[in-house]
Length: 356
Ligand code: NAD
Image (cartoon, rainbow, N blue to C red; front, side):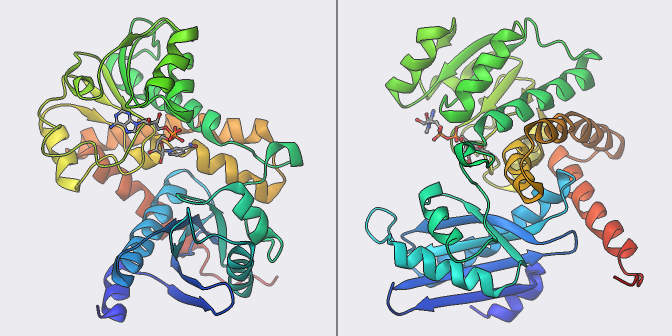
């Protein structure tokens, strides 16, 4: 891999390779774009088979964070840490403290958060070495579990889709198929039922299904059948890549709107949804509530402020849907355009000198 060619192509600002002898830490911090503010992004620990795979992941995820933060109106850029290692075997206090010291050496250019394979306990070790980490439990005055805010943002996004399609934000009577009823999906189910929607759920985990069925009146289908459910909204809240060659033609919905990250396996699947007349709520716009919640810690966490900022997802998404219609482009492209425009405009405004 020609790393500098790669960075030129992806417009990355900086990549730091980390190695620490005592803890065995091998990691990468990628900073994509800090035009809007410090880069923020998760710490992913994964048993990468090759170093190249780890670099690719760090570059891809940090770039996605730039778009997500910009789209959510946040003054943060995109970053990502990846640690090469098996999260079940290779974790230690020393490893995360070593990472914390590297993050501290960046002087605030990158702020870490929990990610795949890491927990808030790991973040606590990082915090012993640097203040540039977010995701503190609510019991200690932090933002706590981001799932409820993420779910609320998805509901606001659904309202935007409804207004766009019907002129009303009323979700009563809406038929929604929720794929994955874990931390976020189960709260979305509750919020939908409170608003009078009819909900069908699917999950590979029987316990997750039972937990929802115990307190809610929903229809259950198998994880495979969920793609064929005739509904208004298909709401992906499980894994990424679920809009793919196999599933895109099966969907019998009018809208795809859910919490899962990286829903489109490839951008062309977004084009296919567009061609089929299915309204796609770009994932990083509609699921930004979690990020909005955690970044609020930087200002001293205030739940009301985080709720207010998350509520604005409705307006942002509506603008994207309108611009997709006016410009006859798929919604995922309209979202990227909005994020890029914000970075460009704010970047230009901030070029002029002011004494500090
Ligand atoms: P979770 O692990 O709590 O829930 C995911 C659920 O999906 C689990 O119950 C799992 O059994 C189920 N599942 C897995 N594979 C499935 C399949 N093939 N079919 C049906 N169900 C399946 O995760 P979560 O925190 O609820 O996050 C859900 C999605 O939302 C993820 O893609 C995550 O990256 C994204 N997301 C979460 C947050 C947050 O605040 N938690 C924020 C932004 C985005």
